[in-house]
Length: 207
Image (cartoon, rainbow, N blue to C red; front, side):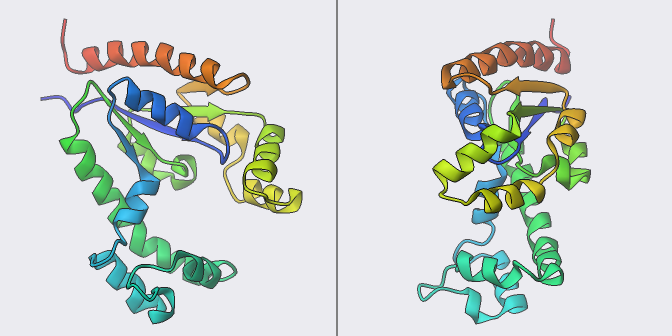
C-alpha cells in the first residue's frame, strides 16, 4: 500500500506557522508537531531525559524531576559542542517519535510541522512536499519585539540563527504568504488543503 502523503510545514519564527497548523487540524488533517515531540521525548521518566541528565548533569533537572529548560538553554547557549551533543541526543528521538505518530495518524494526508525543516537538511527526505509560511523579515522583527518583548538586536540575532527567507523559499514546493490578516492565511490553507486532498488521492492510486 502506498505511503500516505506527507507535507512538511515550516517557516521562520513569528511567521504564522502555528496559525497554519491549527487550520490544518481544524480541517481534519493530523498535524505532527516537532516542538511537541521535542518536549515529549524528554518528559519525566523518559530515556531521553535520562540521556540528557547523563550528559549535562543534575543541574538541568528541576526540583520536580522534570527538565529545567532554561538551565539547559543557558548551558548550551554559547557552547557549540554542548549544543551538538544535545542535538545528537534529541534529533533521533524526535524523528522516531514523529514517525510513530505519523504512522498511526488517521486522515487524508499528514502534516509534519518542523520549524527547522530547511536547516535540518536530511529531514527533507521524510516529506513529499514542503510548504513554507512566508512573511517579510521586517514583519517578523516587529512581531518578535511586540510578542516576545525581545529587543531589536535580540530579534535580529534570532533571525540570523535560522535559515534565510530565500533559503526557505528555494526549498518550498508550496508557499503560504502571510502578508494579510489571519483570515487571509486560513483561507490560503483551505485552498492548499483542496490541492493536497487531490494529491493524496493520486498518491493512493484512487480514481
